[in-house]
Image 1: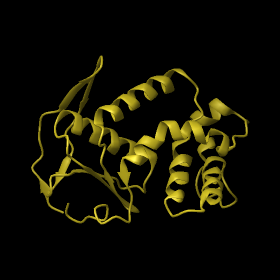
Image 2: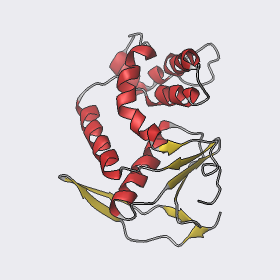
Image 3: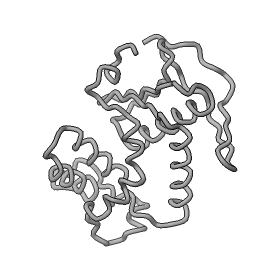
Image 4: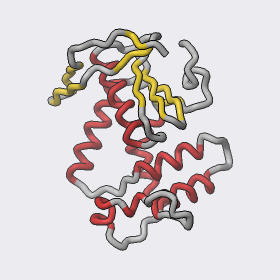
Length: 192
């Protein structure tokens, strides 16, 4: 895809008492925000694309869409209610920085992605999310609970993903609701 000329000045906006600032993202030939990751889809790249799209829509172009391209997924980010998305992110970032909340973004993303495959996948989604959280017999990926911050916070506590799912949903569901994952024509790169 051909890239449009990039703006050089930073994007700055005030949301409540906070002043938010970001470097302008690249734009594709259709004027959509373009975010590219060399890594498979993960919560960090998805949250980053969501926040940057929301800020762009709030401060620059209220109709803009973003596209996150990873080796395994193409995602369209809409953020129809940009101010609400930014306020949600600010509220939860404040809570997360002051409270030890049981939030597991990698596990939740696995769960949500599995549910998108169709009805009747709830049990499989929970099992796969639990495997991402606590590990499985394959040893392929480091479990989310094995990360240093999680080990320090939870030590030897056994976490059941089904018990933490409601809190994860409150935090991460708005991000997922603002995105269209692979399968739609737009997510696959068709012109708007």
